[in-house]
Amino acid sequence: MKKILPIVVSLVLSFSCSEKEKEVDYSLLSDEERLEMAKEFTKNTILVDGHMDLPFRMYNMGNTMTGEVYDFINKSDQGNIDYVRAKEGGMDAPFMAIYIPAGYQEKGGAKDLADTLIMMVERLANTWPEQLALAKSPKEIEDNFSKGLLSLPMGIENAAAIEDKLENVEYFYNKGIRYMTLTHGKDNLVGDSSYDDSETHGGLSEFGKEVVKEMNRLGMIIDVSHITDKTFFDVAEVSDAPIVATHSSARKFTPGFERNVSDEIIKKIAEKDGMVMITFGGSFVDQAFSEKNTENRAHIQSWMEENKLDRRDSAAIEYIKTYMAENKPTVHVSKVAEHIDYVAKMVGIDHVGLGSDFDGVGDTLPDGLKDASMYPNLIAELMRLGYSKEDLEKICYKNFFRVWNAVEAAAKR
Image: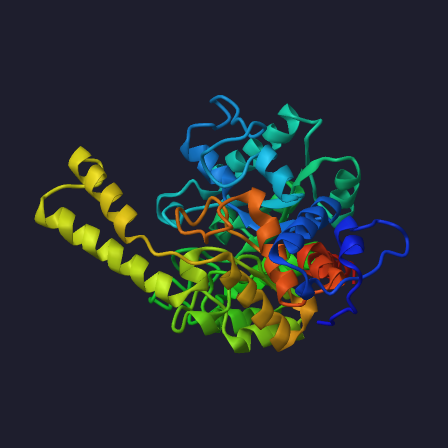
C-alpha cells in the first residue's frame, strides 16, 4: 500500500469531497483525528460485509413468516446489527447469511429452512422499502447507495441447502442467492468440513465438483470458508472463476485452526483473483483469546457435570454469568486490522475485504468492534497502519465488486 504526502491538519479534517481531493497520510494524524476521518470515510464510501447471521437469529427469536416481523429499523441492545447501528457505522451492504445448521443434513428440511430464511429477508425489505432493498449485483448495491438505501444481498451458508439436487443451485440463484458456502460444521454431500475429522470424501466429492461447475455456470460466488484444506485445493482446481473466503481470518495468528485460511490458501485465492474477507470473532483473530475461551468452556462443562446441572438451571445460569464476567478473554479491534494487513502484505491490497460474522460469533467480538456501528474504529486502525483512501475503498467494496463482476463475466463466457 502507498503512503501519501501529508497536508495541513485543517485540510485533513475537512475530508473534502471536491474533484481534486487532497490525499492524506493518515498515519501522521492523532487517534482522534483518524477516528473523525474514518467516520466521514464510512459515510461517503460503500461498505460491504461478506457475512452476517441475522436471518437465523431472527428465526431463533420466532420472527418467522408466521410471526411478527423482526424490528430491524429501530436501535436494539441485542445482536450486532440493526438499521440504526448500520447507518452509524457506515455499513451499506451486509450479506445476509442463509445459514443451514448441519443437523438439517440428517433430519431433512434444509431447503425448506433456506426458503424460509430467504422469505424473511425479503419481508424486511418489503416492510421498510424506504430504508431497505434487496440487491443481486454490484450495480444494484451502487444504485441503492445513491438512494440512501441499505442493501440486503444474500448468500447461503452450507450447501446442504441444495440437498442432493444439482438443479437447486439454479433455484437458489433465481431466489437472489449470490454466493454459497460449500460446508459448515460437518461434512456434507458436497465436501469435507474443517470442523469435521471424518474426511468423508477426502476433499470435494464428485457431486461437489458438479456443484462448483454449476455455480461457475450461473455466476454464483464460491465461498471456501468452513472447508478443509484438501477440499479447498480441489475447488481451486475445478473452478474457472475467482473464489472467496467470505468470513475467514489468517491461520498464521491461530496455528492449527483449519477453519482459518493458511498462507498457501491465501496465495492460491489471490492467484485465482479472489479475496479473503477477514472475520472478527475473537477466537478467529487471536490465539490467546481462543485458548482462554476453550478453557472457560471446559471449566463450565466440568462444573455442570459435577453439580448435575445443565445450562437451563437457574443456578447454572447465575454461575456461568459470574464466571464468564470474571474470566472473559479480551482482544482489541487492532488485531482484526493486523489480519487485513497480513493478507495485504502477502498477496496485495486487491485480495482482502471484510466479513464480520456479526450475529454468528456470540459474545466474542473485539473491544471496539462489538456491532455494526463500530466499523470506523477498524478503518481508523487501518489508517494508523498507513493505508490510503484508495486502499480503504478497495478493502471496503471495490475488491469484492471486482471479484463479483469477474464471477459473472466467467459465467457469460
